[in-house]
Length: 441
Ligand code: RAT
Ligand code: ZN
Image (cartoon, rainbow, N blue to C red; front, side):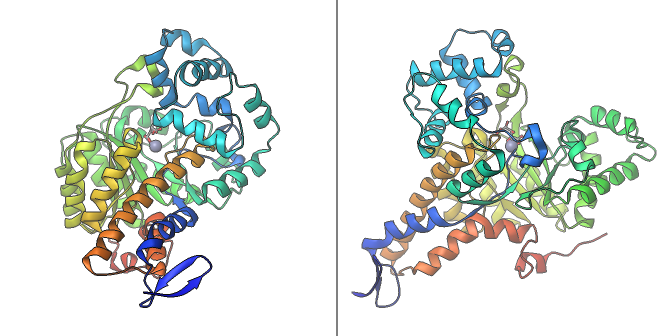
């Protein structure tokens, strides 16, 4: 029974969306709700050379480099000797001209070109290069954010990076939409390298963790936190990650990282399941995946109930167990379909599973974009999957006997695309998670 028409929308007498209008309403809301992209490798223009955009960067994305070697005879050593434009030419010719761009990463480039009004079937990169040559970094950033409907971005900030750190040290005011995430990989995964770098900066740390190591590493992190004001601390972890374990990582985790997180009221984001350098010749494109032990996450959440954890896992096999763990531990927030999982078939499956097991209490996706323009495709593709899954879920709910209103759909999508993350990192002061959170130390 239809009562009112607002523009083209039909509402039932009880305020719920009619079944005929449900699909369109969900699509509209999912398309128009701004995203807080909680994990990327992007930087604002103030970071100079780290701000990547344009056709050559898009085509030399490591996801595409890995695909090139499956369809071309070029040896990795030869490929790395080429200039970036020549690498991009080769990838375009191989994956887009001589083959059909059906993979997710290739289709992503097509989505970007189409959104910018460029020829998706071009024989070479002439037109695209000409287009990007005329763009200015600041204006182009605005354009991409508008097309992608993204209003906040979390970077990945390496406190040991020699290109990045001078910008932080200079105190240059950055774009407020770009938030920092302090990355701990060197400290937790390559301690001897991190210790070396810290000693060069006059922190009194020892390779074996003795003496002032704990105090000094905390001081190092305190200072970087003061400088970057990160939204969270983050680390990627291997598939054999264990907790507890007899290792330097475990000691640093318990004596340095977790106390620092508590003291600064920051979550620890853990991205678990990467096998680095499975094929070193491929460099960044040479990492792999392994199924990890979700029990380690459960033990961390239980033993450190006063800490909060953002967790994503790289293996498809780990997803169901991770949802179960999140049902047991309210200090665990599941996020994203990471890297090799960021394909429509898997995003749909995982999002469906999470919605069924966790309601809307999870963060469905992050882009992991390394090149600004990728925001356009990563979010357009993710929105399609999320809209499909939500539509099915609302439809089932209607069939079961409860209709859904437009404002309820808006509330759900806002929670998934930004609200859950904002609450988790204390960006919304009225949040219940923050009230429930008691800092110790
Ligand atoms: O998805 C990626 O681009 C990977 O190379 C990694 O950067 C991963 O997302 C990470 O943050 O370690
Ligand atoms: Zn990443």
